[in-house]
Structures are given as structure tokens and as C-alpha cells.
Length: 320
Image 1 (cartoon, helix red, strand yellow):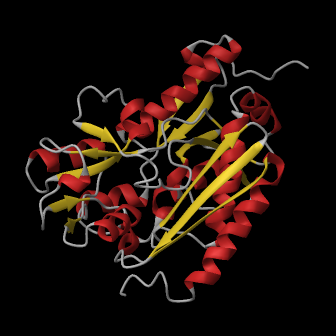
Image 2 (cartoon, one colour):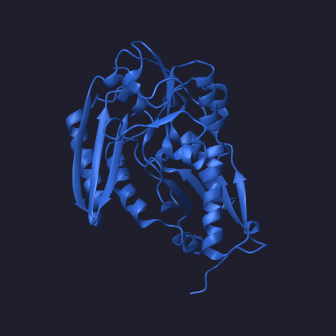
Image 3 (cartoon, rainbow, N blue to C red):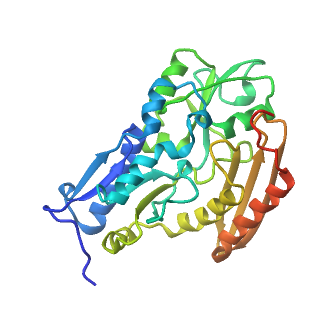
């Protein structure tokens, strides 16, 4: 079959947010498409889309994401442009994506997953367990806050909103003793040698669902673009995320719910660990399941339903 490739008079438009990490992910997508089809850079156009979340984050960087309106604030305008045809594909950090897409859009292409671990970032310490009693920790993640408070209820947490560079500057300004960043983001930004980061073992801090994964969203009826993206799709990442996102969907996961989950492959078997936490860290419920790869989504749903039943209706109440 002849592949419908972009041409100089019709470039493939790649939509993205404008943060350094979002741009790095868009550039990686472009680079992989160029290599797959021997295309020049001019065959693609990177289009930066400012979202409502970006605007509000500029003036409310210390406000919890749940109070700004949730994950959708960072995808809505991008998805509107995708539906209108202003862009052809949208590149996303999958850990920030809602579990359901708007009618007419589909997420079915994933790049190879990066390091899924969280990183502990501090200029003087190498572990969160080394923090002195009552130390101030900066993070905007409810999951990380709950996991941290569960292990160290004595610690004080302040909001670190903004991109990687903003959070590192706050650390430099001594707003907090430490912060947490995804290892995948630092890797993609080429910053591992420049940041005092220590990877956290996953048995100490289970990562966010889909952490380290890049997803590419498209119009569901755009067959030409679908054919292009087939060359980029990493099947293993897709199999792992099918289980993790089904787990999240069963829990009705959002930015207001501290949830962690990680699926890993071992031959033909998929292993899934999941965790839900009270926002104040006072209680953690966790479990694990295994299944054949093709049953990953059903397993994720089953694990999510199991923990949901154990948690009860008010478990995630952030006012607890």
C-alpha cells in the first residue's frame, strides 16, 4: 500500500503545549516520523497551543490543580483544534490525559515508554527519608503528597505549580527543601546531569498511571494520519497503558484522586500494581493482579473495581 505522506504544500501539523517538556515530546514525535518515512523537517509544522490551564497557571502557580478545574484545562483547546482540523495530531504526556477522549478523537499511538520512576530532587539530601522532621517539601501532585504524608506525616507540603524549570527555580530560591520530578521528563529534556535528582524505587513511591509515556491523539476518521502513526506505535507501551488506564477509569480517576498504578510485562504475562490513598495520606489501599497481555484492560478494570469497593464512597474526599 502506498503511504499517504505529508508534502511541501501540505505539512503535517503537530499540536502541543508550549512548555519545554511538551515541545521536547513534539520534537521527538517529529523526529520519529522523519526517520520512519525519510522525510525532511519541512514536512512537519509544530503548532504551539496555549490552553486555559496554561493561562491560569501563570497567575496561580501555587493553586492546587483540582481548584483550577482539572486535567481538561490542559487539553481542551488542543482537542478543539484537532477536531476543527487546525492540527492533524496532538502530542500529550499520558499521565496528564483524561481517561476518555471527546467524540471524534482517539488515542491509539504511544511512543516507547521512558523511565517510569519519580525522582527526589534536593541540593543537600538523597532520599525523602533523610528529610529532617517538619521539613518543607514542594509538590503540586496529590498522589506524591499523599504518598509522602503516609510515610512522613511530620512533613509540610507547599504547592509547586508550573513547568520543570519553574519548580527547579523555586527549589533554588529555598521555598522548599526538596521536590519531586518524573525521571522521564528530565531524561527527555536532557537535564539528568544538571539536576540533583535521585530515582525513587517503585516499591517506595508507585508512579502515576501512564507516567513516562507519550501519546499521540488524532481524529478517529483520519485514515491517512492513522496509517502514518502505525509506524510509530510501540505495542508494549500500548499493552501496559491499556491495563493502567482501565484501572484509572474504573476508579473514576482525576486530578482530585491520589491514584498510582504500574503495569509491567514479563513474557506473555502482564502484572499490574495499583494503589489508592486518602489525600491526607492517612490510609493507603493497594493490590496487584496478573493476566495474559490480551486481557490487560479487563484486569485493570477488575483491580480498579476491587480497590474502589474497598475504599468506599468518601475515601477520596480531599477535605478529609
